[in-house]
Amino acid sequence: HVARLLFLIGAVCLSAQERIVIRAGALADVEAGVLRSRVAIVVRAGRIESVGPDREFASGRVIDLSAYTVLPGLIDARVSFSPDPRAAQAEALATLLAGFTTVRSAGAARAGDVQLRDRIAKGGIPGPRVLASGAPLASPGGACDAPFAGEGLFNRLDVK
Image 1 (spheres, rainbow, N blue to C red):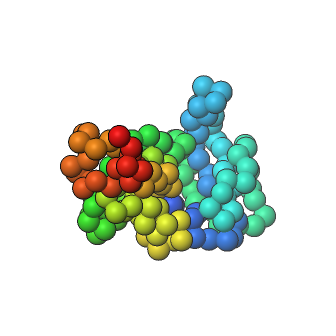
Image 2: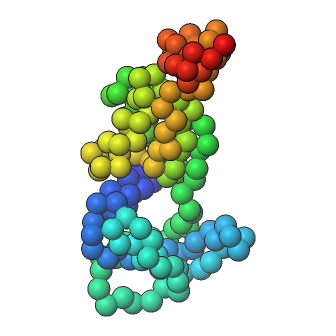
């Protein structure tokens, strides 16, 4: 139920050029370290335009979450997506539905994370913002050498 709601909000906010007002019962303000009550979040073109006290807005689509607490998107600083594009797409969606709006890939075979990042950024598939590493940093014979079949940066540079 909550996962569907998050997906719907994400899809609407990321794709619409119109003004969207999210009315939250509470907002976890992590910078101030407080829980703010009755907050309006104004989104345009997938970007937060303003956050402030909930009030009536003259224009824009309203998403009423006044019965819920809204959290900022989470960041996962080390993910590994499947080398299979379909599986990676499903993993990206599951990651987004879990509340992670940004992830940093630890590297992927054949730059699969770069391709996934680009498909998400173009709106082709839903997923978090992906900070892609591309080829992993790996030395010949190191831990990443075998899984990535010599694709590591040091392997390509022929570093001895």
